[in-house]
Length: 357
Image 1 (tube, rainbow, N blue to C red):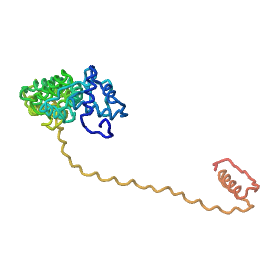
Image 2 (cartoon, rainbow, N blue to C red):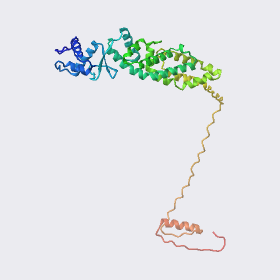
Image 3 (cartoon, one colour):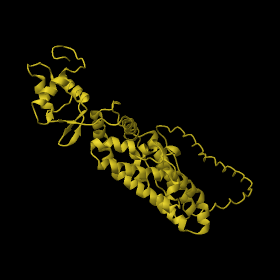
Image 4 (spheres, helix red, strand yellow):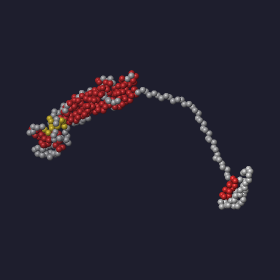
């Protein structure tokens, strides 16, 4: 944006203007000073974003980077703090810069501008360094455990690419932790990677999880089978061979997650150590038994038949009868009363000594 225009054009006006202002001010160049100088000799009326754009272009033209209290800062049109200082830097070597940009992406997932400027180099360093610091402890633990596990399996360190990658990642992260953000480009460009960038990038990202897997329960079984009887060692040999092969190769080469490999090895070694199950005895032969004939149905007993009572003779309303004994007399009285409830009954008793009736 020219000093008398309304659109942005990359030119020399602001570079020359700031140079004149710096000639009259011997102090450090800060974002706040550059904002004041933009409005000299007259107020420009620019908003913060437009001022930030002018300051960013000036820093790029002069090979300057932003810092605060000695630490690198990454500026943008949206973010430029007034307290930040602009430091004169030497732009990175182009070959080193290209290697560092490629490795920042493949190892740490950091993407920056491909332009080899001091500001971009500082931005790359300020983004890579925190990731390296956060990954260092896990990478070191993983490398130590991997070396120990390979030793228990009888694998020499020089024969295991996975261990070479793990130790190279620790060495790289150690160096990144030791330099400031401005030194990150050189460390990345000069790093010696004995396997591949892809393998080392996987190691940086996966070391924490892999360290946990290498403390899995399977290693107790590995110790038991290697110290056990010869027949147990013989049965366990194929399982241990598979473990050696997996732990000797980089993760992207095996293709199978480490946890899956270790869980499978655990199940197989458990089968080696446990006695084979005893098969159940065969069932006894079936003895043919003829079917039991059905029982005959129980006899049907007909219900008792009560003979019908003889029909009662019609009893006249008046009469006189003679019966043989007292039982017949009482029966006849009952019949008369049933037929004629209001009848008057007279009884004549006559007796004699001798055989009674």
